[in-house]
Amino acid sequence: MNCQAVNPYLPSFEYVPDAEPRVFGERVYVYGSHDQFDGKDFCMKDYVCWSASIYDLANWKYEGIIYKREQDKYLSDAKDRRLFAPDVQRGIDGRYYLYYAYDFSGVIGVAVCDTPAGGYKYYGHVQYADGTFLGKKENDVFQYDPGIFVDSVGKVYLYSGFCPVKEMMARFNLPKPIAKGAMVIELEEDMITIKKEPTVMIPSAEYAKGTSFEGHGFFEAASMRKMGEQYYFIYSSENGHELCYATSNKPNTDFVYGGVIISNGDIGYQGRKEPLNYTGTNHGSIEHINNQWYVFYHRQTNGNPYSRQGCAEKIEVLRGGGILQAEMTSCGLNKGPLKGKGVYQAGIACCLMSKNGATEYKAKSQVSSEHPFITQEGEDRESNPDQYIANLQAGAVVGFKYFNIKELEKISVTIRGNGQGKIKVYTKLWDRVAAQIEITAMKEWVTFSQPMQIEAGVTSLWFVYEGNGFIELKSFELR
Ligand code: FUB
Image 1 (cartoon, rainbow, N blue to C red):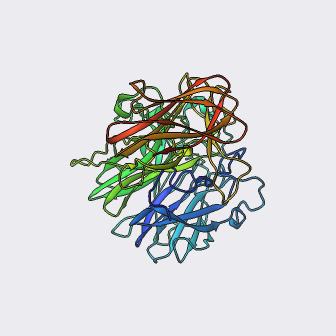
Image 2: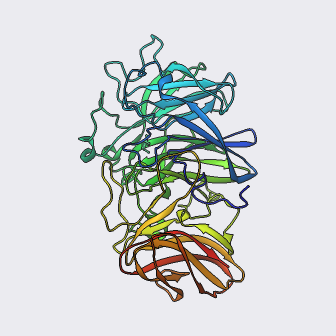
Image 3: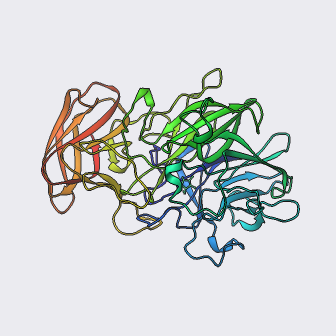
């Protein structure tokens, strides 16, 4: 049993990005894509589900594989297909419906199950009344990243869309033209037949000029939630690293841009222009769990965009309904800051940079050799977490937020590598050095300690390496 929640909130061997958190009864379930650690592409694995009691977000239960790629009857013969970001909602008949885009097929698959996390069975594809799949009619546009929403009055809305900016389009070989923004499609109570044809609901970058969405046009990751009487449409914007929201008092029209909820590089947080962490795709949503709203999103690991991990943060909803941009932390779903005593894995770092800062994880490329990255030993697996931070060279910065320090006497780091030098510890970056740990790294993990006294209170911790070669950081201890 864990007594504290950290980011990433799932065990560190698990790579579930694009998470849609959904509360059903007294549990929260996350439905996401399933990346392979060190995979060569996005979403190479079958869908799994994890759940937690809404009263205990520190302990997540593995529900197992809920849907396998070969279950899709439309593309089951296709090799190396990717099951992209899904979403699940309880249908009018009380069963659970899972929506997904299978690779760049441009159609939306649906699977169904009697329970939130049982084995889902293929149900069909979203289709017109005549049986033609959405995305297959002559004038249809490309369908992708479905979000599903069942309104309290029993109406069913599907949201979909993929609008890369022009410079990115050349990378894709899509079967249909793309829409002018995020689309909404009303479905019949059977959860699969189209009742009202797609209409564009919020604009993509190209069509956002002069609207409230300018600079934050729709890219992908459509998701809908309702707070009171307001509908909140959550999406990944043209900037890629940020999840934004738009609000309306209707589920299908009149949306106005609201703001950024989270950036996976903390860009925009308190006016920040440069990333505090490695950025890349971002996809997730908000959910109300035991009287608190949270945003679920993902971070990048392993130096390329194909090993993404789910993180979450509390969000603050203002009286008028606005959402403040959340800060990336190491303690996301925890009730508050982490305890100021104990051993912490380095993989919970929420800030990571080389001496020249952080950069974007781009498709089909590995970051250059100056950059540190979060990684693990060995191959992809479903057990045995052993994450650490690799390739910390001179000037590299690792940050953790937040700890509630009561009494601190000593700090230790467990490292390996070939570097020799020191790790400077700050409570506020580039402020006074709180401790300086002399280190000589070796092939095997070794622990180095240093007395450290700081004022009691809530603080962040920053480790900056100064020395030659490189070091790897496994964990640190506060005593
Ligand atoms: O996970 C694959 C794709 O990356 C998703 O479909 C997008 O939303 C982006 O997160």
